[in-house]
Image (tube, rainbow, N blue to C red):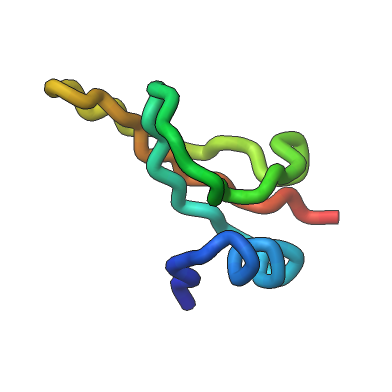
Length: 67
């Protein structure tokens, strides 16, 4: 299942997730809605793709560690 925002939906679904697929843009933007903080040790990056261009970004695959 894919959860496609907003912030409250992400926050509610995060405890149920086993995989995160995130697009990360390394630039500051004005706004008031963000993906919620999550435990990077619990969801380590398993794969990352870098996309160059006028607005470079990264696509990160995070997989939840087994307890």
